Image (cartoon, rainbow, N blue to C red; front, top):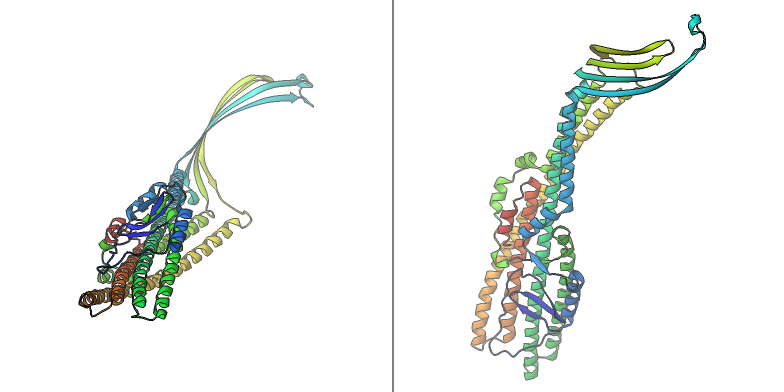
Length: 482
């Protein structure tokens, strides 16, 4: 097996099966002139190939996705989003049911009875003894219109408050799912970046070992220098194997949202944007957070439900008034004391119901609702503290990652100058090839470190947006160069 490093990614041929990791950025190969070709060790590549095959499976369709593609996959086929939609549909039906509490209750009933009569005793000698069996059919149509019923009339505000909680919870859930998907995506991108970095180091160390071998053979260096250089090369191989394992773990998180056929992310490191920290400081303030946070909105909606539940529980202690209209038609085929009959009865009026005693259940429900409201109010305070703590931590992380990215960018500029100077000295014969190789390796790894630091910035920025409930997938995707 031979592993080749190219601008498109890391290609691992294995008996006709090739798997390409999407390139996080292009790291060109810079080699001094007149350098002989080198054969690199394949041990680390074997482990990498096995890790990839274990991850994707033989014959599986390998696919690298952009951030927007991963989001689209999640929204169209995600189980989590289906659960959210079903829960919202159930909540909407609850509101419809509450609206029906104010409407009249109309009922139609038909009753058939088979009656058996036996005379036990009678003052009327005509009916001193005897028996009779006859049917009776009763048709009833009734209307009940509530005039005053505190529980029924307060059901709609309560249902709307509960629906608001579910809407807020759904927003929290969607926000969390999208945030977790973005974080998983950037973890895969950073894992790919670590593999690219390890590959760059392996190549650079291999070139350096080759240069030292030539120097040792020519008597310009001692053998112990070669041994140390070879040890560094082995360490770089180990780093690459660890990076492969890290990629497999990161992909497992992304596949949960984007599908099991995803084997990497398609991200161009050269197109990475820059996080505007000044704009974040201006727009993402604590005051804005307290009004926009989905978690806080959910907690406040739950507290409003607590108030509505108290009102509903207290309403059960109040009397109810209903308008009543009944129409009854009864047909009797015959009885022991006379022939058949047909009767119609129409009843209209008002019914007052006053609750007297139900074992203390109603008052207990009031106390239960009051305790629930106290818990909901405390949950609002708890959520506010947690959100503010998270905000401060993320803002600190945003500043730290911005500072690190700036320092690495400065080091990269200096390193590029050092490479140019080393190239001139090498061409003039005043510097060894090893010095030039070391400078190039530092420059190439710094390029990847800068891109990795920017990815970390994007991840922190996305988590800040999620905290505010302001995730914009198109903007984040464009900024991240995917």
